[in-house]
Length: 402
Image (cartoon, rainbow, N blue to C red; front, top):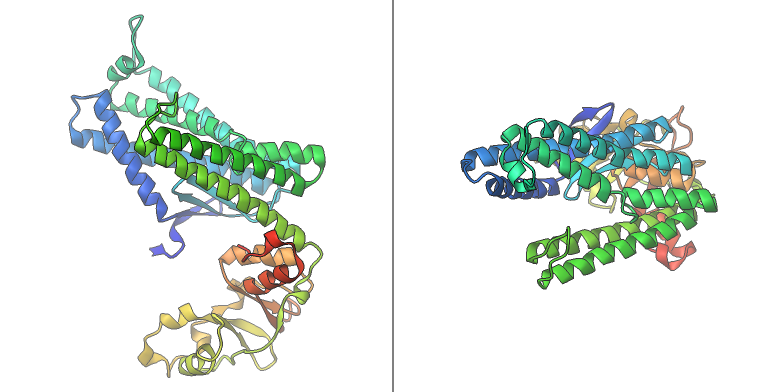
């Protein structure tokens, strides 16, 4: 089922695999471009055969992108860094790592394995593809060599070359590309300061990103560049990639600055005391009219008579129940139970709470006095952290933390 945050297609090694909606666009573009390319390489092939091979090639390509990200994720878990999700999206794939690596050595190991995976895959596929060529007369061009191949050899040739390109491209020292993270690992090991290393790597990433954008503008105006090519579409695509890299580099540094600003701050300094809390026997009709319509919150805690947290009920839960059933429905029957919630305690670090928001992509976290007794102490919202940063931190941090 396609959800708001993407299509969850399954789990590998306990890591959730999600396809973002933007992936459909790049998948369609890759399929079309490959159909055209295979037609140029093999003009005699029927359109249906070229299209079918293009779809297979695109699926295998994204499978190799998934393998690249899975390599990152498995090494990250070996270093004790939780990986919640691998997401395939417009620009390839990304591993949703819960926190920064514990050391420069760990970051190097987590990062380098991705490009190495792509390059090794590419080399192996290229070697296997060469077995389908046979004896090639001296002076035969690459296009003539490919024209001698059948569908399987053509498929492996393209997959081999594209994986090598992906691996090498990711080694460009522009944060947050793998090369930029390797640069940060090096700077981190030299300076012993993650924040400073991130700043320098972020600056390098923005320079690389805007450099790509500038090259894209040049291509847009008809200049042909070696390797990159030329033309309107290629130029616009490179501008888009450059803008994305520059924005991602800047956002990553902001994230590190936010974590740094929250260092030593505890949840008790950020939370709101218990305000609105529902008894479990509250009907959905009362919940709508007495709670949701009278307060801006998107979700409310459900507590028993002793004040122990039982779960949370959100607006999205209400929308799943027909209005004519609200009077007969108790909130306890539709709530998210405690064991499926992400909770924090007043003694937890602010950075722990910030990371917890990302685990479930929620805007509110219940705060319990003690995880054993589940006694509700208050609520913490993303806006509470943003407000604290706005009042206490430097201007670059004055934004909604994500």
